[in-house]
Image (cartoon, rainbow, N blue to C red; front, side, top):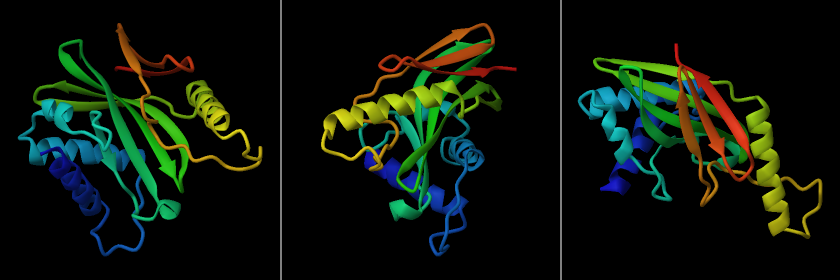
Length: 192
């Protein structure tokens, strides 16, 4: 069943981007967010609980949209469902969304889908701050330790999330904080 869901998400990504005949498929965080909302509304009868059933190739709860089949031309968005927690009168689906452009991680954003039936509201954090820089430095350090012969100028591939990575989420009042314990990187998003 899970491979079918991944295939459906791939087709949904193609539909959102103008069909499989389109020579370029441009994705951004807003299109990823729209893809999640569209999936809930049109394939899950408006029930966001389905997000806990959608997995990536590593079996983690995630919503993935591929921008192009060739990595050197792609901008892919991988939203890892870190946690589901009550927030106010609703349920918060807490994501960390990584963008990999041309085989390089370019941003990681925190995103919370607040489901307060019948309303779905998105809250997006900033992805270009200290959390992203700390995380990226950590992943590069890990890569270089595994490839000691690599030249310092040699680029390293950094997808998102890396195999085995763990993230935690905490809700305090109107703020959600996502942490990558291995690096100490943190992302926050305010709930309005």
